[in-house]
Image 1 (tube, rainbow, N blue to C red):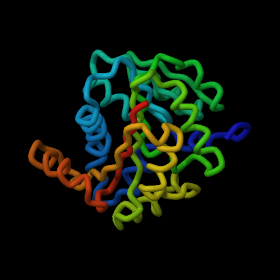
Image 2 (image 1 turned 180 degrees about the horizontal axis):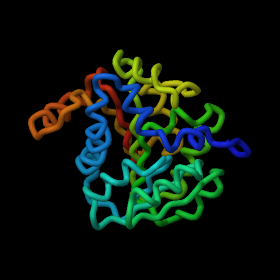
Image 3 (image 1 turned 90 degrees about the vertical axis):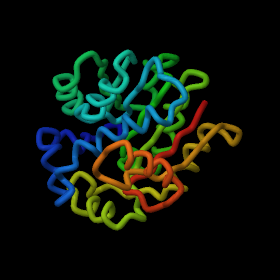
Image 4 (image 1 turned 30 degrees about the vertical axis):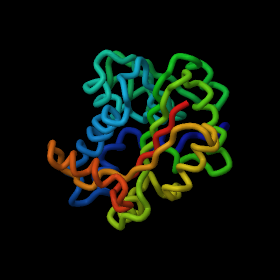
Length: 231
């Protein structure tokens, strides 16, 4: 990615319109697609993190909801798109933002972060760079910290259709869940805690549907999946 103009620089101002348009009927549930991840993060973590890094934060939409769910947590956001970071600073208060162009530049977060949050970002990273970025993120985590990566589930036909329609994903390749788990496991080591689960079975949110969704984490039909690993 170094030396290239980030593709999201060209569409940052119409980001939300692009996403909602590609969702079709489900566009009206756009907010729940963002909110549920902060809700799920709280469910997955055994304790409230002191600091969360949203890697590939874009214009900061997930951080807006992370701030609501984790009001006392220090939040950081980074992205290779300078235009996105500029807009993120306008969208989210009380959060530190940085443009990160290389894996080495992640070192500014060394020993500051005890949760790395990655929301449908890995499939945008070129194959030959993906493991290097994950290793870099592992390296900045505090001991005992967690990485949680959400990705679109290629086995869900509606998700696959959405990705095919979304112009932002035209150069992206959807990642198989087990592949995603394995590349994270490679960085964290064979003895590390790691778990794969499927999620976002329902676009609407309430306590009953959320409870059911947690029970269905084993079923590979959710619109998305998550991989959580502990250092």
